[in-house]
Image (cartoon, rainbow, N blue to C red; front, side, top):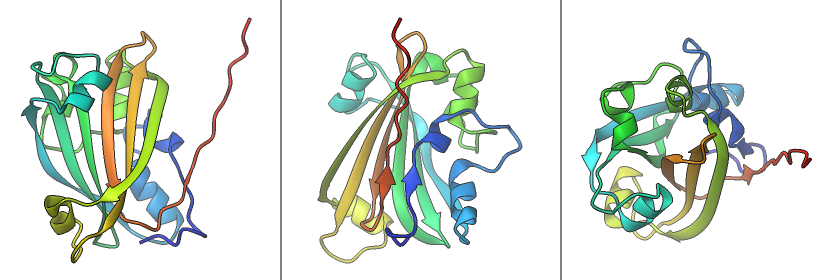
Amino acid sequence: MPDSDAWISVSTPYVKPRDADAPDAWAQEAADHGHVGTQRLLHVGEVMPAPHVAAALHSSPTAPVVVRRRLVLLDDQPLELVDSYYPADIARGTSLAEARKIRGGAPTLLAELGHEFRHLDEDVSVRLANAEETELLAQQGPTPVLVLRRTSSARSGRPVEVSVMTMLPGRHLRYQLTIEAVE
């Protein structure tokens, strides 16, 4: 687990399009700190969204979404679970709906499809991990987790990705905002 005093995570590299041949943002961040960062794809498929996901995507709770569920590892140790949800009408027939790595990452693919991120809304909370999370994160007994929910909207204003990151304690997140000039 990263030392929270020495390792500060910034969201920006995770939401900007990347060169298709560049390492993924997590692998790069971990390497920058002398570690190996990897991800294990746990599930890709269409699901009925939880109410908070449907609301964030401005869709009906009965409209399916595509989910990509990943286990994030640091030096082969579980660190975080990430569930990313996409409107099915955007994801179907693309790499988002396939159980394989996306070259350049989801933000790159979404930008290529005309859905480049324009606005991000992040919400952070703390709770105890549920039984499945406790098992996947290789924890024993009740474990507090940091939950970051990010809704990414395209230039059109349409929300196109909701990511729910469930992290083990010890993380330090930094937020940097750029305010555009108002004319």
